Amino acid sequence: MKRIVFCFVALFLCIVALSFITLVSGPVDVSIGELLDSRIFWDLRVPRVAAALLAGIALSVSGLSLQTVFQNPLAGPFVLGISSGASFAVALSMLAGFSFGRFGTLTAASVGAFGVTLLILAIASRFRNNTVLLVAGLLIGYFIDACINLLITMSDGESLKVYVSWGMGSFGRLTLGGIWIFASAVLVGLALISASVRYLNGARLGDDFARGLGIRVSLYKKLVLLGASILAAAVTAFCGPVAFLGIAVPHLAYLLFKTSNHRILLPGSALCGVCLALLAGLFPEYPLNAILSLVGVPVILWVLVRSAKRGGL
Image 1 (tube, rainbow, N blue to C red):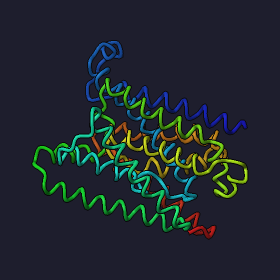
Image 2 (cartoon, rainbow, N blue to C red; image 1 turned 90 degrees about the vertical axis):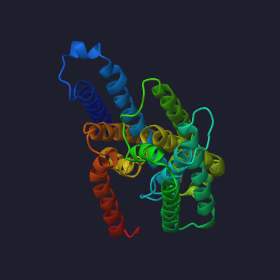
Image 3 (cartoon, rainbow, N blue to C red; image 1 turned 180 degrees about the vertical axis):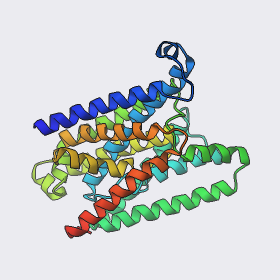
Image 4 (cartoon, helix red, strand yellow; image 1 turned 135 degrees about the vertical axis):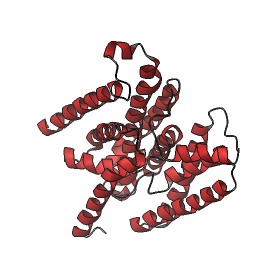
């Protein structure tokens, strides 16, 4: 218990420190007093910190939930094609001019993410082999990427420029007014997953074990998948297709907290995700996904090696 408390306190302090550094650092050297009264602080730096906080929480919780539901250490919104589905719908909006209602990009990303989630769920119901599910997710992602490339070749220069910039991923495009929409979407996704914690704890040992505990597996699995899709869609809409956070952070949380209890892992993963997102956000001059890949790829390779040693892959 002392270890868990220590980890939570350490992560919280790390978040406070990284948030402060993000707020006060930048190309313009001004005093803190002048900074608090400037538009740079409120229009650029506060939204950037908020974007990193919300994206770190959303993708980490989404990734942990998907890895638990599918019992696959490499599952995640990016690997399973959920983020690709959101990207495709956004591409339809930006490049092909399709309208997705009042909230535009957020609605488009949600529709695309949930559509792929339903497809993954249908595949999972037919194949019990988790490796098949992983391959299916990758194939869906490749297929969607091919469709996006076709849209790119048929788009005009201005639309293409906007989409390419969005596709590189960034915490810097969120506006002060957009924070509340982003936060609301994340809260909805978290609420759906939090309501399913008992199922997630049971699902660690398989759906049959969860049914033995009297849990309505079909209902809670759908709630988790819906929540994970909303979280991934929200991040994709406001920050672009952010890779590796969803797949890498849950394993860092397991390593730190040494527990499979999701009442601890969910907030633990969220804090780890926020730390990593804020750390990557300290280098806004570099593409966000490039920074995250430097951490994400070694973690994934470590998971593969560890699973191979245990006979899991």
